[in-house]
Length: 70
Image 1 (cartoon, rainbow, N blue to C red):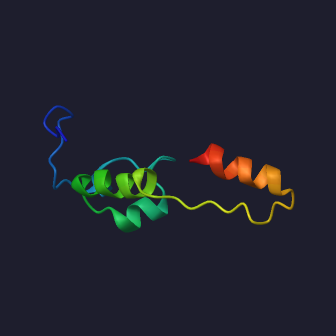
Image 2: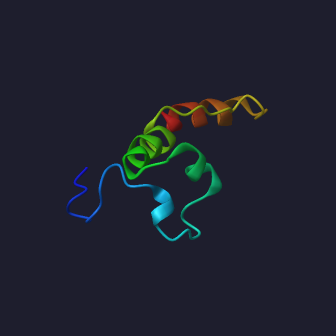
Image 3: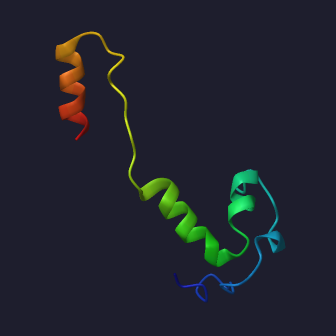
């Protein structure tokens, strides 16, 4: 991450930025510096996910969902 491009220090505290709707309490809890944000967002949005289709009674539809999701 190119912190200098954004005129940030990688150890800069998130509390030094105005808190608005984009900085949620959960983000504040897990990210204390600018450097913490990227790994947190990668874990949140780019890691594995789980889906559940077993509640769908139509077997053909459930199997289609499994294959389409992959």
